[in-house]
Length: 373
Ligand code: DCP
Ligand code: MG
Image (cartoon, rainbow, N blue to C red; front, top):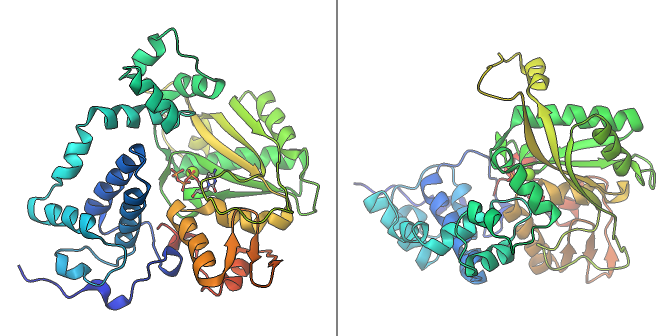
């Protein structure tokens, strides 16, 4: 078949923060495979290949149309030999043998399954795999395994929290938490962030920022919100982390490191009745028990850090990685979830909005729904 002209005419940037990526992905047949290969590399601790596959998938997600031949990707950044070989297989055979090999690998299957449990990271998963464990049942039946509190909750609510959360459910939770926060502090500010702020229809959890318009007034608020959720009988699990913000420190280089804001990782009970009211949906008796468990993250930055926290928690992860990389490599600045630091001028650049931060970086503003890199 005739090869369409290269897509590279758009001058696609190697940085996700210089691209616009909506939730509409025209190259899902490639990006699903590349992301699975990235995950496998991560399990094998191959950082380089992992990043390479993730960057390649991210570039393909930003394209305005589907790639039908290798000629169309000529000149695009971040597409290396491995990626091109995978894409060629998919174009010719309609499938990737490389990914099928990975999918049938016993270790990959086990690590993917184990890390799907809330509270289980790659290290724990690897440990369990090395002990010869292969299924969740085997883990629960193994007397010598000590699960921590988070993992116990992860197993207890496994079925519910491995099920995608819908936008409708996210909005219902937003109403509940907002009502709760306003009952405690009428001028508190709650913002939906994470994937739902980027316009995604489904997510693995629901992320919120909670703050107060006046500096310092946010102290104690999160704990009171948690108490109130508990009183309402909807708090199934809570892990609270106090603030460890040290503003004298420079923005951190490592993205994966947790930020230092006060936060909590929750599992909440969402009544289906809540959504029927919101959406006018019919109840389906018999099929459900009338509620589900949902993973919720609540982060409480002080208001002067709010813009940085919002930018950092809106994601996507790839967008955040490239924002930081761009700041460091192209601007000599250091960005993280708390602050932006100009290394040349040796000063922190304050911001009250995301627009301020993009402006400091000399970047055109990218809307949240264009950050699905
Ligand atoms: N984030 C962060 N620090 C963490 C965890 C997350 O800065 N310790 C940021 C990066 C993510 C965003 O917050 O883009 C939300 O994290 P999620 O894992 O919830 O990712 P998404 O909301 O984008 O996707 P999902 O639909 O899977 O929830
Ligand atoms: Mg999320």
